[in-house]
Structures are given as C-alpha cells and as structure tokens.
Length: 121
Image (cartoon, rainbow, N blue to C red; front, side, top):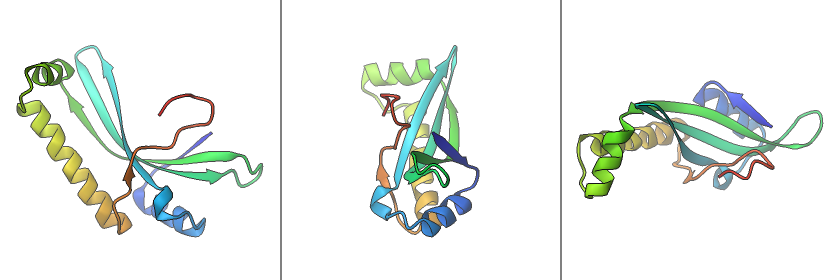
C-alpha cells in the first residue's frame, strides 16, 4: 500500500514522528510517456507500517513534475549530445535536489521504495 502525502512539510513531520532514519529516505524519479508528451515526477519515499494492521507500507510525496518532449530527449541521447531538452531536465533535477535538501535538511539517497509485490523499482 502507498500512503500519498501531499506536502513536503507533512512528509518531513511524519518521518520525524515515526523516527524513520535519514538513510531510509529515497528521492526518485518516475517517467511516464503518453503520445507526444512525457512527464517526470520527483518523489520522496520512505518505508513505514500501517498504523492499524502493522503491514508494511510506503510513504510517498510528489515533490515536482516536469513535462518534456520524449522524442527530442531520445534523439539527443542517440546523438550523445546535451541539447535543450536534456539540459532542461538536468537543471530541473538539480533544482529539485536543492529544494529537497533545503526542506528536509539533507539530500536523500537516489532511488525509491516500492509497494510490496509490484516487482517495480
């Protein structure tokens, strides 16, 4: 189960209340492409337990999103060049990491926790 938290301030408060160690917090990026648009979402995740059942859950907070052109991005990758799209995404990632570090007081490990049994990472 994923427990979606709607603000980074609430995420910080919850991880502090639950005493979740910094080493367990992850900052990850989820990319979804639909037709001509791509969206990358920056998410913070942390392992936790359901307050009633005690089952493992994942706390997740969506930090930021960027819309990009996946065709242009793939073209730049194939050409091994850093064009406008790759630069824009790279700058966005840098801004996200700076924002998260300012809000949490540390920069989490890159990656993300997943819902048990999904086989996704």
